[in-house]
Length: 221
Ligand SMILES: Cc1cc2nc3c(=O)[nH]c(=O)nc-3n(C[C@H](O)[C@H](O)[C@H](O)COP(=O)(O)O)c2cc1C
Image (cartoon, rainbow, N blue to C red; front, side):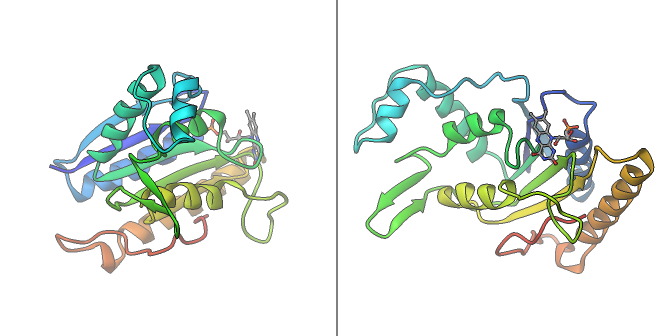
């Protein structure tokens, strides 16, 4: 049975733009496979602490130091990720990049000798690739002609999840949530259309269909 892991990163909880967008993605995935199970990992409340000393020492050495609270939490979060067939991340943009809660999750799952190996040729991922959908909400625009700020969020996620072997990333976004309500409503409509186009594309029909993007496309809407 397919397992969807949703990581929710907004500090404002569920009544938020990124959560609503991630819910639409989850809904479309469940429409494709009504038997799919949703596993929720809510981290926007800051429930994932920063990594501790043992974890940091282990990460920087050639052997594991397998004690300390961070290692135990890391084991749990990695198992959750490994057992998921699809990962959905709902996140706001904070200061041009991921919020610190998502960064804390990343620090626990991007782990030496567990989700990647360091080789003379660079870091090599140990996770099986699987579809990753990222639902982003941002107060301003970070892509397209009307962008007025840099985007360190999407390239960062591509690079850092890529280290672990996750390359199949697809981004959707509601940008400009700080704009006038009519403009936000228009943006939501465009994003909904992008979702419909994506999930109804011929490449997704058929029993073995999966997102085919080898590299993540630019954020939609
Ligand atoms: C600490 C903080 C930093 C933010 N930085 C940015 C930013 O760099 N760019 C941007 O467009 N919006 C920024 N925002 C606005 C949020 O991205 C925006 O309000 C978004 O819609 C929140 O998503 P949510 O409804 O899912 O919580 C920031 C908000 C906070 C709280």
